[in-house]
Amino acid sequence: MTLHQNVLGVDVAKDWIDTFDLATGKARRIETRPAALKAFAAKAQGGLVVFEASGGYERPLMEALEARGVGYARVNPRSAREFARATGRLAKTDTLDASVLAEMGHALKLEPCAPIDPARRRLADLVARRADLVAAITAETNRLGQAREAFIRRDIQSHLAVLGRRKLAMEKEIEAQVRAAEQLDRIEQRLRTAPGIGPTIASTLIAWLPELGQIDRRAIAALAGLAPQACDSGKYRGRRKVWGGRSHIRKALFTAAVIASRFNPAFKQARERLLAAGKPYKVVIIALARKLLTILNAMVRDQRDFA
Image 1 (cartoon, rainbow, N blue to C red):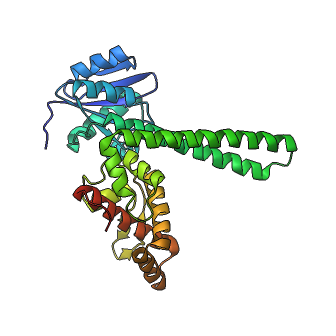
Image 2 (image 1 turned 45 degrees about the horizontal axis):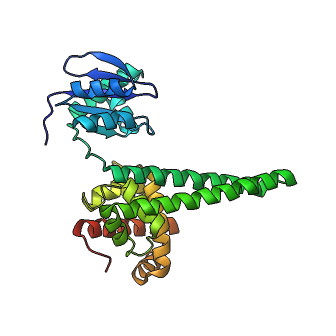
Image 3 (image 1 turned 30 degrees about the vertical axis):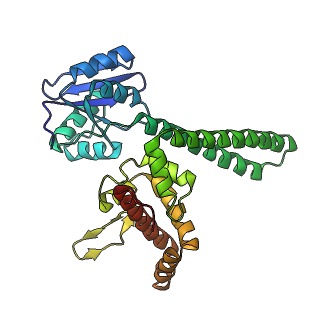
């Protein structure tokens, strides 16, 4: 376990960051200008910076810290809020959030995140943009189904044609990005030997689940939101449910499990056995998705194709 001289909490906003130094108890507000972030990173060397995932607003801070070799931990906002409540912090301000993050990093002895490979980071941006385009196509398709006015229908159809072209262009760029990075290309080719894994799901896993092959099967299932969580209290035994984790990864693996259960003999047999035992269809597919993720994790870890 790495021992850090100091822990700094950072609450990230669009135009500034609020920082809290646990050693000195001092709070500061810093504009998210490159020069200001570089200066902050220089002063934070030797410490651990803790901040929440903020939908991309944390990227300039991450890049400044990585350039200086400063360790950072990016935490789930829900976890940070629950830690605040557990320590009696019900109020919420930017400065208070920064102090809570610093105390969370110290109390939980958070480990720094591994630096993100620039090639994988660009791939993640491209995959996210593709997801945006797919969402826009779905929304416009739904509107087309409700539209009755001829002019509006033509307008929606024209927009759908544009979105379709942009989606194809984005998929070509994703493929080019994977092929250009030797490590990503090798992982993608390996993942695609598994049932249910095509280019879209493979690139999604590579971009948004970099821990694949790096941690054990239980931890990877929890990250993907596929680990069944207990709900027991006293004599009560509740139904296990999956929740939390990375929903986009869970959705991708759910789709892959559906495909695998139709065309792969082993997965098809497992699906039929579970259905015959009275398990609901969604529960069966989630179980198969978890099994598939375990296989993919071992494949990347052991550097072997699906057998």
